[in-house]
Image (tube, rainbow, N blue to C red):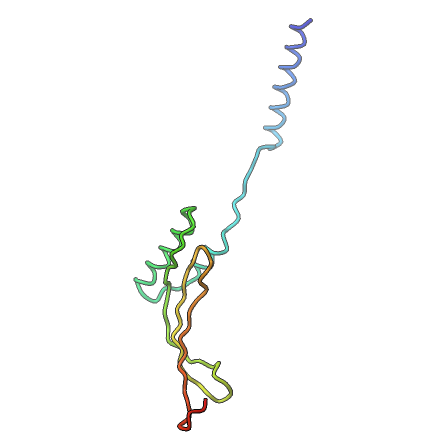
Length: 119
């Protein structure tokens, strides 16, 4: 009697495993793309040095360890329109990649004053 119960249980287990393998009931994990890596890959490097910095940032993101040291990706000089109506200056911008997200960026703006000292 016990022998017959063991055989039935084994037969049922084998049939269940066969049915699961045929219907595709396996554990699948689909990896979703990391939006930060996608954003880093969208940067168009203007120099070999900038390309190396972007690749370094991607490598840091993929290594699974949060590094507190920010990586400088790019610097640029641009026209600064934030000075007010009709006033255009210059701004030096820095773009960083920062894994622990405590640095967003840095901008140095030119400040122009009138001869009387007013802005």
